Amino acid sequence: MKRLFIILIVFICSCSKVDEYVLTVSTNSPNPFYIFEYKDGQFITADSSFNSSGKHTFNFHNEKHHVYWCGENTNKCFVFIAKPIGKCEINVNEFDVTKMKVDKDSTNILLHDFFQKRVHFIEMYSEAEGSKKNEILETFYNYIKDFIYAHKNSPVILMTLNDLSLNPVQFLEEIFLIKQVIVDQYDNSSYLKEVENLIQLAQQQERNNNLQIQREKEAKERIKALGLEIGQIAPDIIMKSPDGKTYKLSDLKDQIVLLDFWASWCRPCRAENPNVVQLYEQYNKKGFTVFSVSLDQKLELWEAAIKNDRLAWPFHVSDLNGWYSSAAKQYGVESIPSTFLLDKGNKISAYNLRGEALTQKVKELVSE
Image (cartoon, rainbow, N blue to C red; front, side, top):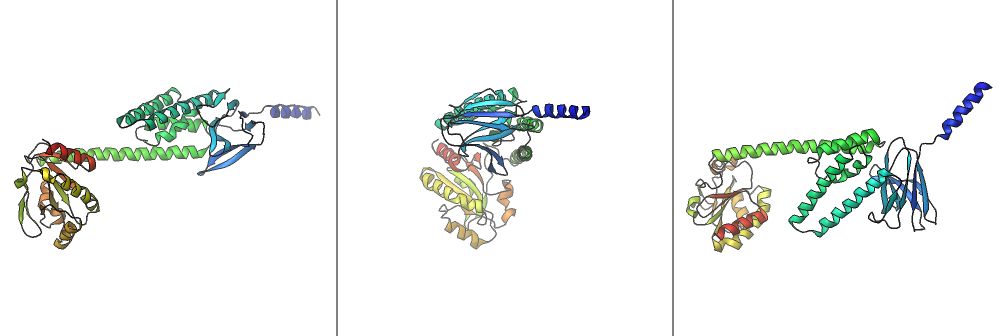
């Protein structure tokens, strides 16, 4: 009997200790409020409260932190972080982060402060123009970095992940800090999977960036070895046109020349041709022309592409040796389209410009 009494005392004591997190929501809306979880790409209703007075209380029993959404529906809701133990009071007369009131819970007060500042940056960005947008974006990212390091042990930094995912390489160290917070404090494995995928993406992008840097370095070394640096005289090209006429690049030294390596079979080249045609039509009378070197091997395909794309300038040349073109070798061309912009002295002024950058450079050169 004595042993049964002791067991009963232990049972009562263990039941009286309740680890729970209590969220109290006050609103002027008579509509029901729901708690949503986000799982497998969709919102799932986890709890509900039907109280027309606008006072809703939700109880949570989680071993670790958990992210939830609360509101009338998934379009009218706010996000909060439930802790293993604690309480939070939120006044939601409007589903506007700048007007909501958060009390009692330091974690969600911090989260609310972050969201308020984020909204402020978004508003400034949407109103800004031109280079000012980039300045605001840089300031915002610096704010996020500072926020993460100032609160690196807080579960709140998980909520910065969406913004960091836009440029994971730049924030790889910060993403690792977020991963550690997820491991230590969260009970949802999908967060961990998401951040691990982001880390893998960032590491792959970093490898690609390093490879691109190496390629650009090798390209610069190759350009230097071939005598193709900015300001140097372009090596002469002497080749025949489709009708057998010989053209020399050096004969065009009194004009601004776009030296364009292309081919009829090159889709990016054909897609770029309308822009080159427009540029030629706009500036031809001001001393601009195009010297096109084709990497084709079949005369009829080359001629058809010139006709179909309306490449009206006369300077079309090729030795019909494809990638073994002597001119391509001379200029170190390993991919097409590839362009060199020459000034009136036949000096190399720019490489591989496209779109507005090319137009502006041509405009600048014809004005000199």
